Amino acid sequence: LRATQKVFALKLSGRPVTIDVMLDARLSGDFVGDDVMLNQILMNLIGNADKFTEAGSIEIWARIVEEDDCQCLIEFRVSDTGVGIDEDKQELIFRKFRQINPQGHKYKGTGLGLAITKELIELQAGSIRVQSRVGQGSTFIVRIPYTRATVADAPDTRHKGPSATGKLAIGHLLVVEDNLMNQTYIGSLLTKWKIPFTLAANGKQAVEEAKKQRFDIILMDIQMPIMDGYEATVAIRSAHNPNQHVPIIALTASAMLSNKSVAIEVGMNDFLTKPFEPAQLMSMLERYAPAQPMGQTVPSNGMTELPAVAELTDDCPPSVLTSDRFRNVERLDRKRLRDLYGTDAAYAADMFSTFLNDVVPELLQLPTVCHSPDRNQLTALAHKLRPTLGMVGLTQLETQLHTLEKDLLIDIHNPTVTQRCRTLTDQLTALLPDLQSELQSLTAGQPV
Image 1 (cartoon, rainbow, N blue to C red):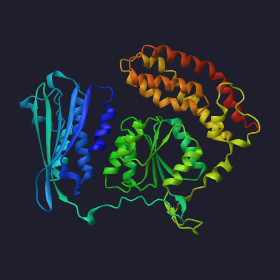
Image 2 (cartoon, rainbow, N blue to C red; image 1 turned 90 degrees about the vertical axis):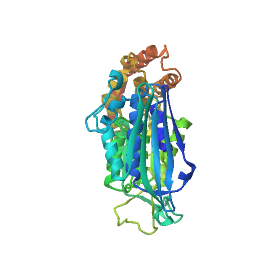
Image 3 (cartoon, rainbow, N blue to C red; image 1 turned 180 degrees about the vertical axis):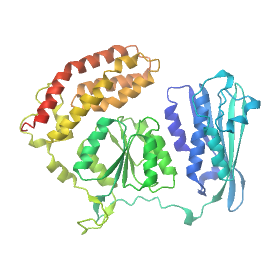
Image 4 (cartoon, rainbow, N blue to C red; image 1 turned 60 degrees about the vertical axis):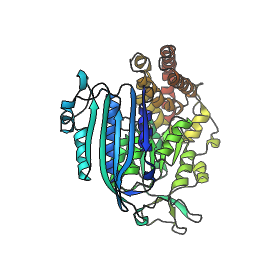
């Protein structure tokens, strides 16, 4: 419940809506039940409250209403101060494909959410009802029976980690990332290190992949469309699947402590701030890779042994650059490029190509997005694209976009933003011929 609250609190950020959770103190123990269904039920009900509440509050209550030594009946309430529902229409909302829009409001949806929620509850021998008044809000009341857990029921949640005498090894990673530039960067590193991986472009895909097979580590981006990294982590941690206790590493473009705190609270184990260097990713993999007994030099289980960080830096050491391949553009941060790509010209060329073909068109849309009535689109776009500038050495533009993003978080209607976006894209446009020249130089394979 606390993790779900955190996820929706982030979604509601910037809106005049608060979300609170109140828990019965007797709920501190463990209970046996279908946590996957419960998570889906609560996400549906809170999502419904969010949709119909433009201002006010959403409250989530959980309490024990009946109990004995072995079983208890737990009641969950999700209340909102939204538009409310006419009394004569309240029963209709639980029917499939029937969507009630109070007071003529138009809300998007399939009309399936509450019907599915009711079915999930009844599958667990539970019940749901609604109390609502037009203009005052709604309260959905769910009751589900649970059994108190014994020691034998409790899952082993301890992280096995590398042993003192074990050799680090990894079998399969799940990489969850919607940004093509970041997909290319991470995928190239893992391919170079001979680490197999599966790619998911959003949180929903990640949850589906997590149901299919067990991964050794999950690298999870935070801000993604359809389902973000927080929601995906809550779903994976709540589900009876092979990855319920697998380490999840957050990939975030924000170094803000609040975001890191939320990542830990929803069940993530650690975080990497983008853009990160190969050695930083390797260090994180070493920290969370499963242990393999010493002496098993050729893994019989399909696992790939990780190179040590020292081996990694020997393989692509920035210090051996005797001349500067990135010499054509004065505003390129050569140190950043060396740290990211070492002596691998093909790797750098692949990243430059991805930036020019896929990222630049989005960056050039910044001034247009500034005029959108929803400035949150601009904040999201700036957050998504900022690290990509650093990945091609444009750290000055990266800093400018970072400052703009922070200013938007302080004042979403900051009057200087439009001109600053235009200035940034003008500077980028002026650099495009030089970036193309650098790409040609990298592709030509000139000696480093």
